[in-house]
Length: 141
Image (cartoon, rainbow, N blue to C red; front, side, top):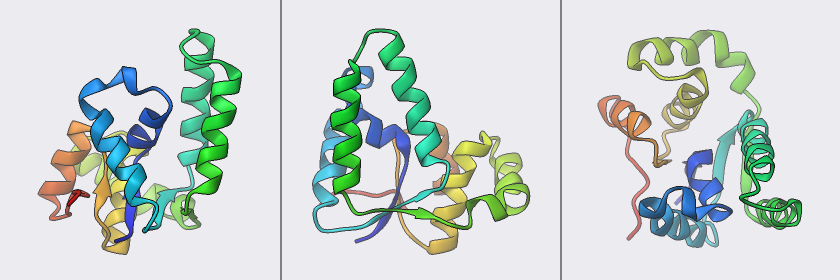
């Protein structure tokens, strides 16, 4: 089953120690990607790069660790949505307002709603908004 992948999940493949309670979920999502495609808003790359720079700067991971993580992302079936920018100041902004989310989180919600796909996320506010909006959260069987 295809799904929308939140960076909060993917980044745990690199730094599971930042959310030990979510690490098993993140690992299961990674396993599911062997048979599924994940779709991400086009901001995913920038959001990921930002976190990589921060965790490298804090000495949590090395540049080599980050490069291995980037290589892993390149091997997975992850497609970037080409419409993220076009929807940013319309649907995404409206979702951010309605659910009191950051525009970044609202982009994941907008994408999942538009494509009718479940959302793989560990962000509690995003889970709440998605559930309220009638969207399913990616669950592993």
